[in-house]
Image (cartoon, rainbow, N blue to C red; front, side, top):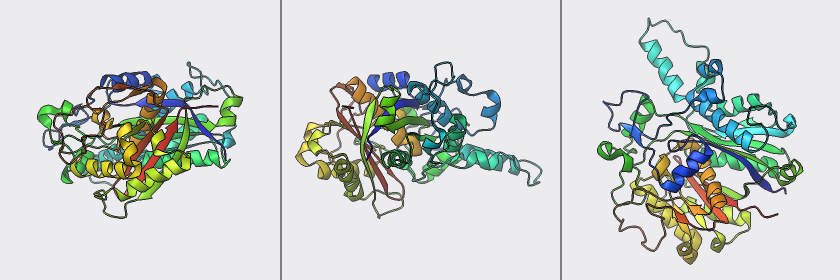
Length: 421
């Protein structure tokens, strides 16, 4: 089967609106948590999130197009343009640099929820109006979760496989795996993949508050995302997009592309346990990591870094670390582990995508992103684990593993490897 390589990445996050800014945020241990600005959160238990701010979507998109799109789609297209330029498909001025075969290129882009903001606004407008059932004709195309992939395929004339994966917080990992399979099995030469999410809305915050899933640390929001800390009280909702351009090795080499990393292996599994709680012993997560390593043909000793799901929830963090210890055995004490959600917040369906970008940046720049906001050791967590607390660590990273797990028990594990010809 064909080898799959990464040639372009795009990032839009609360700690950086481009790949260089995102890299700087990861290296410096920046917190993206801030007061919510997209609506008045005064009546909500949680009044902060990791919002994307100070970005201008007209840098890549025209104003008329922006008015017709939900925020999550705008974010997906914004990150896709950065990735396509890095991959050498587009020039820096937006003109075409390489003519793709449109029938051999596609887009699989995830979103866990889709256009929640558009749906919420339409319902509010209807309820606050005359009562006449009139909705915006763009309402449905704005809100459905496949439109990130749809608009990207239209923007770049990609006529190959194009759809969305929706599996809660594992969505981005499943999108990347599906896209890589299309290349590995010879169905496509190039795929645009990743995820986007924008649910910092009244429904989004209120819904997760009702589940007691979000941190309510309004008095200390910058440190609210505390994976593995004894005082963690829930995750911080994030938004943004991560997009990867992946290709067959032959296609990338034939056009002289710069190869950033190789997609070495991936696997999916299910906890088959609960609608929102993880399996307490990490049974499904263990299977996903073991099968990803088997697919990649590597041993646990070869993994240098694990970017964990690590959402900062009391149950989830400890269950994942149990799974990692079971999958890696004694080798677990020789690798670095961290949760970049401590900085970006939890991007739900885009989490795997933006964290895959973090893994690639770790490989390229020989560093381990930190788990920030650690103050108190959790007695239920093995102190011998290197959780890379509070400060980035310089380290050669040849193999990085990204974990993402979703409500419903969906698990995804993806392995990136330094490219060697």
